[in-house]
Image 1 (cartoon, one colour):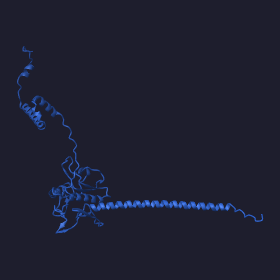
Image 2 (cartoon, rainbow, N blue to C red; image 1 turned 120 degrees about the vertical axis):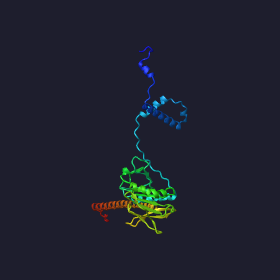
Image 3 (tube, rainbow, N blue to C red; image 1 turned 45 degrees about the horizontal axis):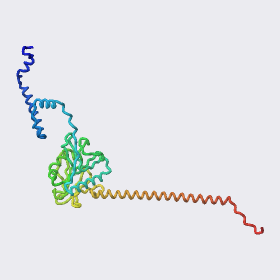
Image 4 (tube, rainbow, N blue to C red; image 1 turned 180 degrees about the vertical axis):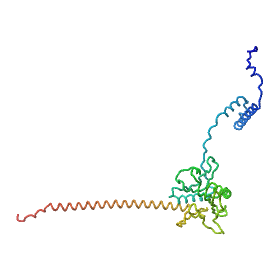
Amino acid sequence: MLRSGKTPADIQAAQPQLRTPAHAEAESRRHRMLYATRAACASTCPSAMALPPDTATETAALTATLAEPSAEPAEVEYPEGHWIAQSTAHGVAVLQATAALGLHFRQRADVLVAMELMVYFEEGNRHAKLQPDVQVVLGVPGELPRSSYRVWEEGKAPDFVLEVASPSTERRDALLKAHEYARIGVREYWRLDPEGSLMSSPLERYEASGGVSGRPATELRGGRRRALRSAVLGLELRSARQSGATVLVFRDPATGHEFDGALAQAEERANAEAQRANAEAQRANAEAQRANVEAQRRRAAEERVRALEQQLRKFVAPSPPPDPKS
C-alpha cells in the first residue's frame, strides 16, 4: 500500500490506456452499429431521437443482442395463387376449358386438371413461380387436395399449360412465358385469344424439346383455320366464338366427338338426368316385382282354400231327403 492510500492497480487504472488499431476498429464498429440502430428507430419512432444517447449503455445492450445466437430460419411458405378474370370473355374461356378437360379426364385418377393453381419450381424460393390459367398433369393423383403445385414434391412439371391472353399479359405471355414453361419442363404451352383482337392467330401451340421452346404453330395459316393436335392430351383443339368470347373446342380423333366447356356441362347434366331416369325405372321395376309376388301369394292362398273345401265335402255325407210317408 502506498502512502497516498492507492494501490498499484488503482494507479494503473488511472493512467491513460494505449489505443491499439484493434481497439480503435472495435470501437468504431460499435459506434456504427449504434448509429444504425438509432437511425432505424428514428424512421419508425421519431420521438426516440429526442432521447439523449447513452453511448456506453446502448453500445453494451446492442453488443449483447448481436452476440445472441440468431433464430433458425423459418420454413419457406408457398402462398396459394389468386385469380381475377381480366374480362368476361377471359373468364368464360378459362372456366369452359377447365370444365371440358375435367369432364374428359373424369375417369382417370392419375390426371390433375387445375385452374389458376400456382406452380412453384424451385424449392426454398417462393418467388420462382408461375400461375397458368389451366394446367393438366399426367401421372399424379388427381384427387389429392393442393393449395399450390410444387414441382420438386410432385416429381414433374405440368404437361399441358393454357394461358388465356389479356391486354395486360399478352406481350409477356408471347415473349417470355413460352421459354419459362419450357425451361421448367412443360411439354406443351398453348395460348388462346378470348377477345379475338389480341393475337395474330386465335390459338397458338408451343412445343418444348430439351427445355427449349420451338416456334409456335398457329390455328390460322394462309387465311384458313385448322385444328391443332395436342400430343399430350391426345386431342385436337380449335377455337370457336360463343356468346362474345373465343373458347376452346376439343375433338377426340378416336371417336370424332367434339366438346367444350358448355357442351361438357350440358353432357354432364344429360348424364345426371339419365341416371335419375334410370333410378326411377329401377324403383318402378322393384314395385312391379313386389306386386307380382303379392299376387302370386294371393293365388296360392286361394288354391289352398279351394283344396280344403274339396276335402271337407268328401268327409261330410249329404243328409237323405225326408220320407213322404212318414
